[in-house]
Image (cartoon, rainbow, N blue to C red; front, side):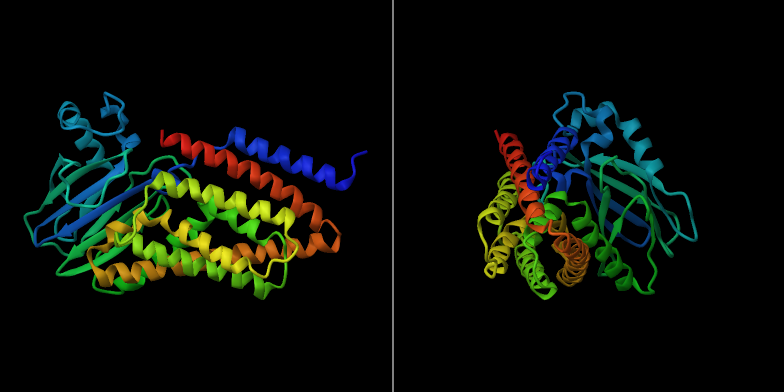
Length: 363
């Protein structure tokens, strides 16, 4: 019969192997399921600059380069117009039907933020006969990924509002009442969702917490991570600091490997919050592209960023509490050391595979 430590180590390695075999690559996970919409609302018109994963319009991608060219758009214009008309609708109280047109956007000459390689951009235009009143935006164009969402910034009457469309929340009505409350709640959910669907971030946090300790010490570690994450996220979203996404994602994978290796040989972990802060600077860059498009309005962007980071912190605290309680149970049964070693070995293996996977993507 295998001794407990060896048995647990083998079980952890087997679990990691199953995850590696069946997992989906997440080298570009932060952008893979994301769409971004900039909506400008006038008296009787509205236009939406929409950036979406090209997989949503794969029928028009004839050369399979993950971009819809002008010629491909022209060949499939009716199909694309039908898709957007059916899945994205703008209505208001005085008039439901709008005159609708769609055009491609030349990505090379676009003045907006750099578009990810697997996305395409379109300009959707709406026109009504009567002045707009209580405009409603219905967005239901999502890929089949783990966390599909559309970040929307809506400009109307010299004000900007931000919302997050998800499969569970597909409609927003623009009224004067409580726009900031809607924005705060929307980005709180986005921040929490980012943590719970960002598997590399979750594994990094779990690896950090494996050595155990008092709850206040664990919260100190996670807060250091959040402060660093917020700092580089803000700088990168404003394009003050930018690094290639492949490099950032590769460094995130290596951060998991480093912390897991440290778990195997270190006996004291008082320094861990400092290491966490350093790696948090890297993790913050991993999500920056998503919020960069919201930097057009400084006040609007600031509220979105603060709400997003608060959501991240709340999600992390929930993870910390769950891990802390499990560690307390396992340590009472004298399995804590075995668990730390076995899971750390599994994390080393998974982090190394992700690093190789992401590094190869750059070749």
